[in-house]
Image (cartoon, rainbow over all chains, first blue to last red; front, top):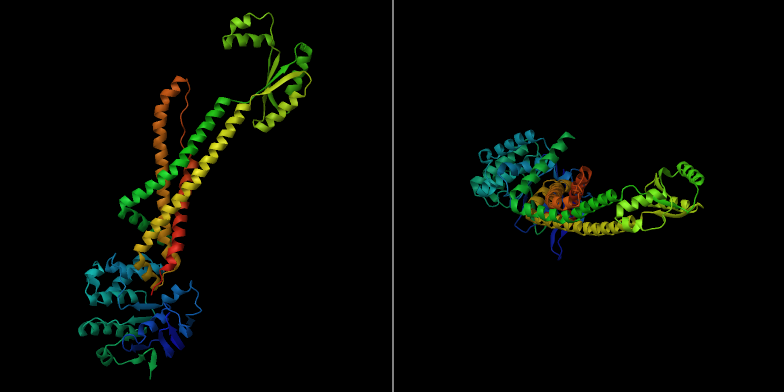
Length: 217
Length: 302
């Protein structure tokens, strides 16, 4: 599903974020990405979503090399991905419902079918009762769950989550991990970056450990 | 297909909503576009009216051919027949010299002067109504008639029409230059409006790109906004011209009565009105398109 082959990523100024990274994630697998902040977790996720391109080596997602991807094909690759951001990236000019609606509008879904799907996604993350609320009125945990609802509404085959439990207390992060677990059970490929030891102990799964941009074995 | 039509309709509805959300700014923009457009279009309307008036006053062009003094009746009959058979001539009218003198007496108020003449100084004449009305063919016919031996003087009453035509040409060019400059202004106005919108919607654009929006999808609402704003600006220009003409006609009525004429300024024809709307919509779209292509690529998710 996702394959890295000798990937290097340097940022302008010479900072080397990732060094010689090679790994593979199979379809339906749930994998944690661990390491301290600055270890290159976010960069790795950005490479998968083709927000960044590697300087050398190849990143192949669903059989497509992100480096040789034409800019016109990029949106269609991203529609296979559900992205959960650390900073949520919610839009505060519309309510929760419309935030989750956005991916479906982009894909051109029928309106009535979309509304059903949006409610299903909101229900899944326990926010159905808050669909009319503006994201700014939601708590940190609720905002994170709303971001998850938006990431899954399009039924992606791959879900990438960047520190989804980063700013949450243990109870909330447990809830969110349970939501992820349920996606894993229906066959979604998951890659979750975290530095939360409690989460890793509670949910055993393969972990890719990054240290200074290199994979630890 | 149906689905994409619904998507477009949704974008249009969204665009109208956006215009409504900032009523003052939208109104001012539309007014500025309307005023900018109404100047050249108003000039065009006035020109059209002047042209119509000129044609009305000129009537059908005619050629006067004066016969040499002492041309006999037989010869007049022969020339008359020749003229009637001429391919470029529609019909003719013969004016005998006695009749011409009488008309002169009646029409000019020079009865005393004319009465004092010992003999009629006027020649017999033909008034020739040609088939073709354009200046070039008329001149060709005049030159042909000039070569006929019995015609002493052939006159085409087109000199002033030529002068007017030249003047109108000049005015048309001036209107065209004005139109070009103000069209540019319209494009610039839309360009800036869209630029501001793109800046304020930076987050939405970034998130949309992240979750798989194509460039076309992101561009669409801005293009529609430019198009609709341009169209509304065109409609505003139409209304400005319509109300100006109404006022002008109102004050013209008194003036025209003095000249015993029934002249009124005519408004844009249906075709011209639709062209105006189409053109202003296109310019709005163009401004939006330029702005979007200039600014959208700068917003890439990080």
